[in-house]
Length: 466
Image (cartoon, helix red, strand yellow):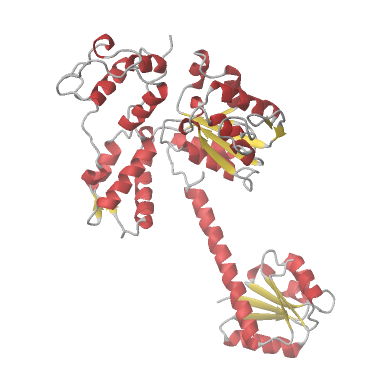
């Protein structure tokens, strides 16, 4: 039952209002002045305070700061726009004129109490979410994830550049979102850019914008994504794929806080916080001359590492259950559960594609399931040893089956597909070759090599160093 305090100096009106509210199921207390209410009651214990504006000693609005968040409804017989505006400015939730209609008063009181209840429920949900998902909905109880959450909370309020490291599919964009949402820039935009998804010829124009006539097809001035992120956060995913020319422009942005559109002679000052992410070793790329060393050190202010799913222990099962609930709700499916065999399979599988692979497997299972339980076959988890055919089909040397600047040269063995050749060659030689050398031997680009790794689920080993 909601408890309402009436502060009114005219006893006839106070008594009539009390009886009206009590008949409609409210608990009511009374006071004749602000000081009387303060002396006799603990104001924060009430759900709503209804007060007259003109009272002996002090105006009714003086009770607003004393109520510490309890909604205050102001009523007065001197109804005017000016007094209404002044009351609202001082923090009143609403304003009602005397003499008031009983139905109007009851509807106003009910609306205010419902709004207050919703605010409390929302706050409780936020507190629960904050406890369960301390970083932008990310789930993790293992030591590595808890350390990550603590570091996010430390660095988020600053404007420092952050470099997020982790394998593909581990949730690097969620880290960037958490940094933005917990920063002082949360009201500004968060602009996310996948550097590997934009053609090399367009990346500078996309990031920094261009002037009309700067190149063929530039028919109008265009603001770049860096400018769009002004007063907010710019997240550059897969920054290791950024061309050297664009790296030079990005370095100027970090050093001078300026951006210059392609084809322009004028620079523009921007206020952008940069968060970058990569699954590659930028330090090794810098040593090989494929990433600017000065940019690397500008990016490497604060480093946050995301552990792969296979190293997160019991987190995998908890994350799988949460994803199952979300996916079932999204697809309007009835409540689903994992079978004991499915839970066992989820725990044993290595998840080379990390959280993204787990999410896709669960979505596929929810689509295909007929009953209540998700089984291993619906998840399409293959627990057979990875690359178990390696001893049966030894990989030919590169000189036998590959040549530079072309696809696979010789015909593959009778029972081995081209993808099998690719997979075996990479697994056999990735610890002795750089990514560039692997790509050259396979006759493909480094980007193509990376894309095939993702498609086939071949994680990179520790970067090769000479």
